[in-house]
Length: 368
Image (cartoon, rainbow, N blue to C red; front, side, top):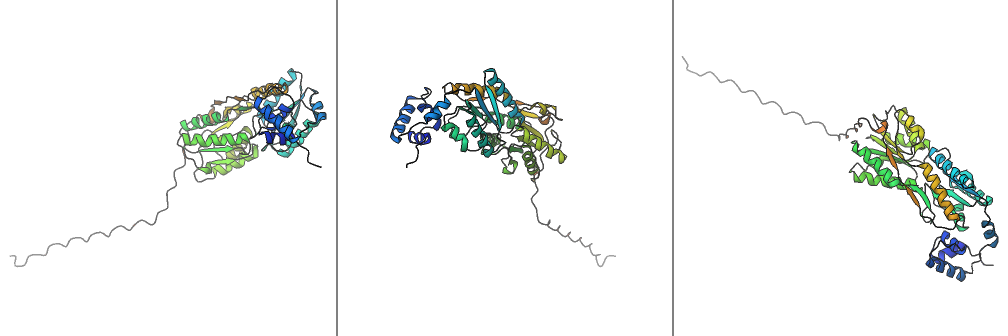
């Protein structure tokens, strides 16, 4: 007995994404004529037969949506989730909230639950490279929107922040303050926000002609403990940075703890700027400079895009602007960089021996 032809096979033959193939085969008008022609031809050639039972279930609305965030302890994602839940409720939808905990296996557990609960759509801050049940959602035609993060190869509408502009503005601010050795604590480059912010940091350092020392870059996992480990590593190099840019607020808290343990004075010994304008960062001493993202706007926009997808439309992705808010952690007198190490030299040459004193003239003979 031959293998069952899946929608993934149809998409591969038609050279379109699984999401596009799913929309064509479900009769959605939100596809191009060329895509419809290729997908239809591929389905005929492969003998694809859609699962009628699954299609029937998908056509029955439950007025629930699934919302998967990366870490519920992260105040940024808490703000995204709150705004999304309130926007969905105002439209008559109940939100099922799930915590991936920055882990693809935990993500799959909750996405499978969303499928079992037959949610009408999913908003996800995705983990990893997009395998597992994330791909299964797309294959089954479940309306999906990404928030904060994206996954390469997935044609999924998304709501993200302008990571490039935010990172470069922060580096420009620190460079204007005279810093030449700026350290960076980033997230994993396997995640789009970690990768985009790290790439933007490297470009910004080059644009300002600053020291591109790879020892000044460390990567954590977007959680507090990793921020502390990275700060310890950066401050242990022979010429430590005089400023730090940190890619999210939990890692910033970990870094602050590590720096204070080392008796490093924030804003005096080291300037500090972090992503996310979490409310209590302005209450620290000193208040922390931040690259602010509008988490509430991000959550509301994600719900709006998801309702468009549920309605059979193909919305454009949204990129929200960031804003640099300068506070006392990077507005005092700029710290002085550590001096350049002096190369080792051999012993100094011996001083030349003094010249012998001239002899006094001899008395003349035959003087009277």
